[in-house]
Amino acid sequence: MLFPTTIAGSLPKPEWLAEPNTLWAPWKSSGEVLARAKRDATMLAVKLQEDAGVDIVTEGEQARQHFVHGFLEKIEGIDFAHKVEMGIRKDRYKAMVPQVVAPLRLKGRVHADEARIARTHTARKLKFTLPGPMTIIDTIADKYYGDRIKMAFAFAELLNQEAKALETDGIDVIQFDEPAFNVYMDEVKDWGIKALERAAEGLTCTTAVHICYGYGIKANTDWKQTLGNEWRQYEDIFPAIDNSPIQQVAIECRNSKVPLELLALLKGKVVQAGVIDVASDAVETAEDVVKMIDAVSKFVPKSNIVATTNCGMAPMRREIAEAKLMALGAGAKLARQKLG
Image: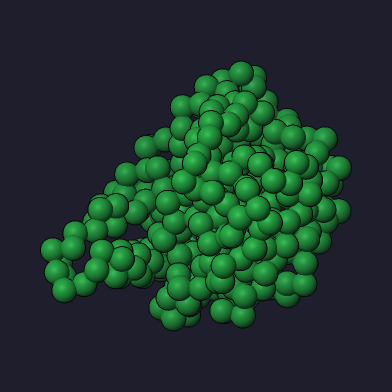
């Protein structure tokens, strides 16, 4: 199929998931109600994507409060009770983060429930997102390892364990989210790609990495205003990614100021091209999506293009996100007719 569709990962959570009301089922504990709400939200996220015509669906990250910390919550050696303030993405902004205080070990499975729920409720290909090792260590304080690289590879080992288990659960595509890749250019080439490869080692399903300039918070919006009219940071790291065994690269394209010719550097990769802007409430038309796919096809073979969203949609209003999903599906269908 030309131009299959997927989303970057997250969808807005239903209002009732944010504060599940135990009055729904007074005989159940709040934990049971929350688990049920997460299950229902996951099923809804899958259904919304199917109705929109998305070909490679996700569970929408409905069971996670944060794309990084949702993974960290199931790891021994992390202190969530005593968070500290830390600069994120080379001090682009400050955040309160947990601390690594002891050797890192998985407590058990991390995402088994939501993966199995999603797999049970769709016959379509299923993608699952995990934070990449470089982005994890840039979002947590180190009070134990004393070495960023050593800690990154410790996390890569745990990611690999969970990724292999997700593959066994029936996941077709495992995507590692690495927004830190546009910040630490030298480190990406020195060890970041190697840590990513360790996280994906031994997987036989499709592997992907998502890179972006950041969305959803004002600090990222402000930072991007300083980058000029062309965002060429990826020019430094695309050749290194192209030489890696990671099979797909998810990248923002619509309204991102990333010169599309840089995509030609990903000669051996399938490109998940962001054709939906997640930084604007303006809903794209199917024709908008076709135009973006056509523009990408000047630098990427049509058979290597997957149409996707620029990034996760969690910060968006649900009605806007759902309308954009419909545009994604309709636009890809129209692109097959016009460009196929």
